[in-house]
Image (tube, rainbow, N blue to C red; front, top):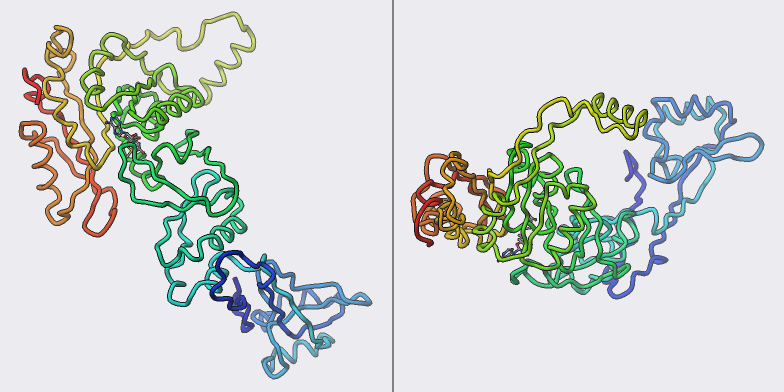
Length: 453
Ligand SMILES: C[S@@+](CC[C@H](N)C(=O)[O-])C[C@H]1O[C@@H](n2cnc3c(N)ncnc32)[C@H](O)[C@@H]1O
């Protein structure tokens, strides 16, 4: 906030302000010196190196003011004449400056969130004060530790005041335990409006923050996986939520079959598909993950996804738009001259982000490509290349994470993994609880097995 200043601009200490935020209590008068100078000398003094650290530099406080009779008043970073270095004093004298006393009033608006928190909270809580909240759309989302609870409404109010994006501040009430990964929350400040509009990876997401799962910390992970997909791929997202994998993949051109058992997630998934204009090749379903894994193979065969549209360059798009404007009834486009690629029946990737239990769903892959599960069809040709499975999980044995995960995956598949396996550390969730993504090629013996697990 202050650079090179010797003036104490910290807020008054108001420890123990619980319940209601008293903004008026945040008031401080600072007595300083100012240099009253002829207006013509202003530029010289402001540019002088000698006064570089001598001019008051507080954000949002104007330090050059109009004085009487064509003079200017420059606020100084000194409270007494003794503090002014000799060379600075000399410069001021040479430029006909008169030193005058001045008061600077600092109010609640002057200080930043961290300053206000530091003034309110007991000293031992200041260092870990909740400045690191997550903003999702207009909602600031906190996860306050017990010690901070007496201050929760004041903290909420400060965040609401200081962060312009925020209209609603909530605190998470419990650890996620339920099936749909949603948690109870308490309104700390602002409007009880939980309908979020959020942008990620070039897509717009709308959802009710109380009713569906959303975790902004997974943004990089979503992007990492989407980067692996090519526009021609078809993706089956078993636990899709409101679409953070499905929609950006769809925007890229991938065909997507996205599923979530939570009816609320399904509702917003459908809404998000429509509002991102990917409905031609992104489809939603609402069923249990195991059923979805077994059904989705036939679904893609019986109702294939339209061919991937090769991405258009800017000039191609402009040409197309020009043609359409010139002759709106003519359906001939530059694309029409190239033959249509075939529609897509083959699923290339399964995404399974339900880290607590996703591994337990892997048994559903046993025999998934067998004639018994494909209406008697022989899929060995179309599935010459088997799908990749990206399965999220937690391990409580970080030292031996890969061994631990591999054992659990192989147990559910009922077969050892092949050579194509990789383990990606996603994030640390808690001490000794690490989130991983294991990516593996579905073993042929599993996919074409005659028995289910
Ligand atoms: C951890 S969230 C992941 C959401 C999203 N894919 C993401 O990356 O943010 C897991 C999702 O699985 C859904 N879910 C939980 N149990 C399920 C089941 N048995 N079958 C299908 N979906 C389920 C939940 O509703 C939730 O949306």
